[in-house]
Image (tube, rainbow, N blue to C red):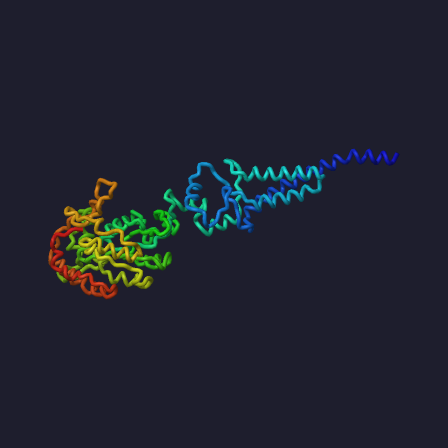
Length: 424
């Protein structure tokens, strides 16, 4: 009787144990999936191989493949095979406490569940391997990095490798527009004024202003006021100590008259040029604090820049020669930037109305590419005695500038000729 009694008890309790073990197995399995999700987000090191759209991604992945991936209409996920293997192995150990039949069934369900979760559907969660994350941080050719830094032309936004830092009314706009013809140069159209007015906005803001560039292209910008801003050299050096700097200089007297002409067009009520140029005209005391004259003391400003950059990283463009021989000056600039001489004399023609060269119209455009109405203004007539005194004032500073740069711009030869009506 005792035997049959115990057998009855055994048969009544076995199903409960099996049910309990099966329930426990499912609970542990669910807990494991939750832990694995956290585990994957922690990005512990796994194997370096990973599957990318069913193909192994290596350094030989072509640009065409990335283009197709970037503009794919259906989102794709990253399937980490290591995750499936570890999950399957752990799930197999977890359900091993059940019967053999339950063990096999649970393992199959586990594998099916993981495959379904990792499949590239529109709503499924994406499993991304730590190996992919590390490579995405090291190079900018993966999918997520392209979305962040690239535009439709697949270029990457970079901080500039060359800057036109001056000078105002020297011919910087003409130089920039000519440089933009070169296929290996991408430049910002507007003046960012980052290092003199917007520095507190940070380098990320500055980089975002830049156009996207491909491998081998140079990012550029121009802000002529940098040359006369005391803290600009240090700030630019902090950003990139090997950057190339371009300075367009012009006869300081002619430049001052052009500067005044621009201001006069905006504020017709300002005093005459002669009044602003002198503290005391009777005594011949020139007001060097007037910005139109102070900018032209090139040696003074260059001295600050040479505290941070060697002359080898600076290139000085003659504003006068940029007008009479634009192709020649452009050739020197392209050499300085390490570029092939693509912008040549065939890209320029002389505009008699404006009095300076313009870029020849592109083949696909019906309008010529000349500078705007703000360029080429007729200068007001200035007292010849004032011009003579200004030449005398600037001469020692010019001589010092010639010595510092190793170039003779021959501005002294223009004495006596600047009193005539000239053009910007």
